[in-house]
Length: 247
Image (spheres, rainbow, N blue to C red):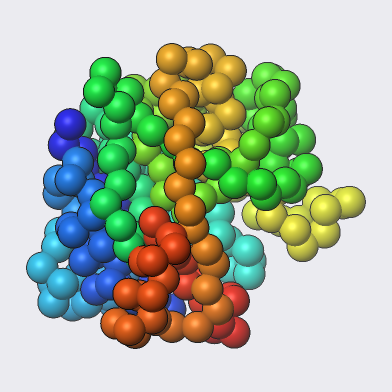
């Protein structure tokens, strides 16, 4: 099954964009169009990479990257963009890959029945699940984490889930209200779109959840070709987060 792929991109990952795109093209047979969602300032980076530029400020009606000045805003903005991608893709499923992620080995996105595969992690952050309850009125059964820096989304289920967000309309206002830290969480992040969607389908659409292991690692330096070859001996993908690199 061929799917549109969304890559939310920020200039902090400029040194990684080509690695990210190459990893998708070489290792994900199910990936079709790659839509790189970013600011106008990064358009030339996308054009040089030969992929489709999507102006992030035109994705969500009534909201853009400058809507809030709070230092946590861009964290929530990229989550809203990922869930808003359901409105711009042309395929029933879409893949989101963070621009600091590099796939190193071939990875199948769907099982033979056409249902998506999901990798899992061990991360646990209680506020994500407190907010899950506040957004959806559902208590998740948290057996594992879905925070693995990429995810397959069912476009129709994303829209269904967004419609259930409470109490504000439009749906994204329910995420915006967490931009300002609330006691006792202070500066900690409170919403995670991967945990939210993953645990939503786990509770409401269990037929969508097919778990399979992938080996991955977070690396705190920028990669080069030799490093990627060595990492490929051990991992399916790696993430090169700017915060881990001191960026």
